[in-house]
Length: 242
Length: 186
Image (cartoon, rainbow over all chains, first blue to last red):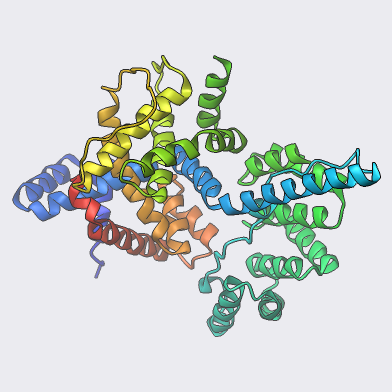
């Protein structure tokens, strides 16, 4: 027996003008008879209007990043001011700091903040679901040391699963195990064909910056910018700062 | 008015650096005014954010013309947003702003503000969902096909993705309905 469609499905089809004339007439009659249904349909119409405006969502993302990165920015500015004051004293005393580099207030920590977890137990075999949940929880809590061996175990069991490989690589980066992190990110990028290519490129930039490989970082940032992917905007910001 | 055009362009392009300049230059003044008119600093932050979104929605209209300095325009919109929020809270009082504001025609803003406050509620509630629901619904509202969402989210089947989508929508509508603002905006 065919399963009845979810009630929202009909509302979605109505909003998208995908109902037949007869179905539309029927729904409108039902809405006239039931104020609850009419209200639900209106609610869904508003939801679709509000959330389909992806340009506004993206602008709001930018504003929220500025808002919540505020304290980080202030800390950074404070550091700069303190350094300037220190410079003046040192210049007066030693006359050696004429070329003291100006500190940028750009918040690198915000640009390279930990990648959110999008892990799903659907991506692994049933018996590995608990292990994945455990790794995910440790990762979310910032316990990279404990999360890493779990991600590695999952990656060994499912070499095609680039999600767990990426999170293992990210843990290695946080633990400053640069050699293995670099190789893991490169493997994901070279493998291609996964949602983790762009994040792997982005955190490889961070690795290059942390290991003072400016030229490699700039080259990869330009590549990310030209790809016009998810990190293109951030890549432009960071490149401008370098 | 080169600087004015730069600000509008930065908002239209969602240029993070350009928006950061606006944020750093004007936000403190807006927050200060809201705080001195029965609001909190967080209210001020909300008002500033919503005003920038309203400016974006206005500026992307083909017939948009800026007839005042950027800050005058921003300030007028912030004032209207804050008045609206006070009315919603049932706390309407005469709001006085201590700065001279050039008169600009705000009549066409009313409908946009009304719409924006409704939309804001949905966006806020979307952000209150779990990471997975947020990603799924964002992809859905970007018109990504169910098949593609299934691949991106690494779900087992298109049917499962559909089921998850409806569950997420249910959570979202529940959050919206439970919010005090929902009744005020109906």
